[in-house]
Amino acid sequence: MYNYIMTFKKFYIIIFLVFSILPTQKIFAQTPNTGFVSENIWYSKDPLMEGDKVQIYTFVFNPDSRELSGTVIFFDKTVLLGKKEFVIPPKGAKDVFINWTTTAGDHIIFAKIENAKFLLSNGKYEEVYIALNETEKNSQTISKKITSADTNTDINPISNISNTVSDSISNIKNIIEEKTPNFITQPILATTNKLEELRKNINTTGQLKKEEIKKEIENLNSTKINKEGNSKTTRNPLLKPFKYVELFFVSTLSLILNNKILFYGILLILIFFILRYIWKKIF
Image (tube, rainbow, N blue to C red; front, side):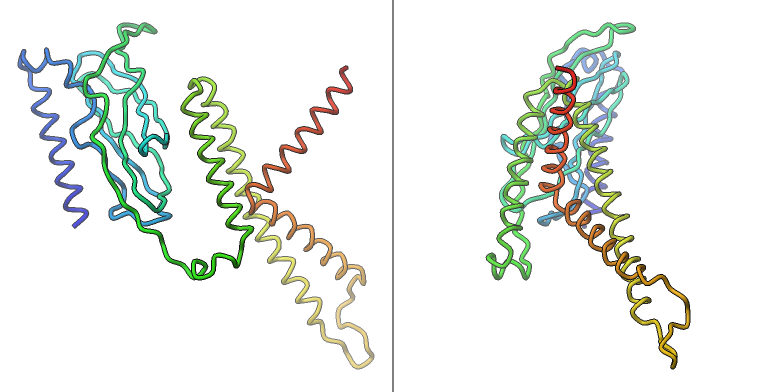
């Protein structure tokens, strides 16, 4: 059923585009056609469930003879979900999307076009007002996913606090991204994404290393002793204590990497001490 709806929606958009770019004087003169297609919000998955990682799509149309560029900003009511730059060739169209992790509750999703401009010549642009610069609002009600942990919310209060703090940090990030110019936010977000990717990669490697050390310890513990009380294979007597120490450090590192708040908190403290050291050395 969902595939049928998506096919119908795409067919509707294609028909709209065909009639919009027909070489008639009336349609070419109607520059207000530039922008969003009506009812133009859809998702990579339907229906939506809490915790789903989906893409929110919209569709921008440019019937003009000049290249159109700008920024599509996605909102959930008044909360900024993300933004995406676009460039559309003359008499062209393009879908634009952002990633979104769904949360339980009522949502009103829509998108706006900002900083729209036509390309006049190399490096020269003309700002343009787009009449269809906002999509219709798409309402979604997402039910809370019931898990075994929900039966007793006091089992892990630290986790609840961590989730609350993470949500607060996410809201602050959205506000900062909304109020800060693109030339500042883009390098910051790029660095943050790289750092987050590095954290996940190191954490994955650490988990594999931890399992490897556990197996090595199990092998040491299962070494058979012959009748004379000696091991069948000669082993370093310090190897087993060393493996336990190594397991402790790897487990501690995994704990830090698994907790975003702990990881970034320690990182900020290290940066603070490094900067303070440099300051003292210079001044």
